[in-house]
Image (cartoon, rainbow, N blue to C red; front, side, top):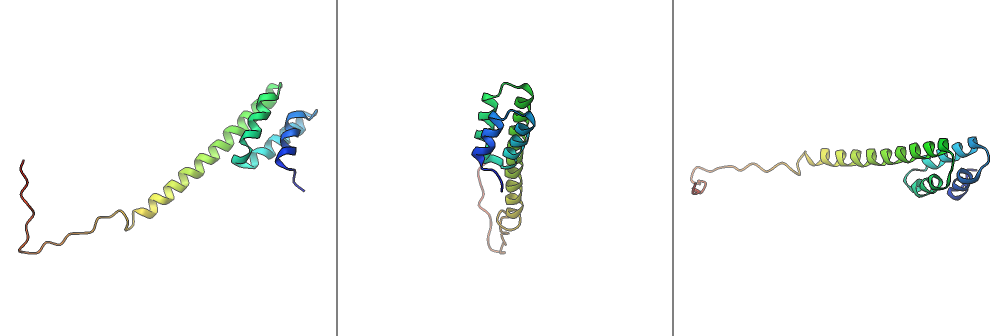
Length: 104
């Protein structure tokens, strides 16, 4: 059974074994955006530089993944709009109509 967010955070903060801390941090990072507050909390309380570095990398990874997902959604939306939504309809001129003369 997988550990809860709280259990992972507590393990990352207070485990005696640095290996356990690393595993918990990686598991938190795998949870994505919802784990960012927990990762920041672990970063704030840890005294070990190696654990701080792993936390910073995990936070950066989660944020990059979030930005990639946003940019992919934006790109998908813009692809869908180029078909018919943003193309102006063509105007047919009849022989008797003229465009208005505009002053220079």
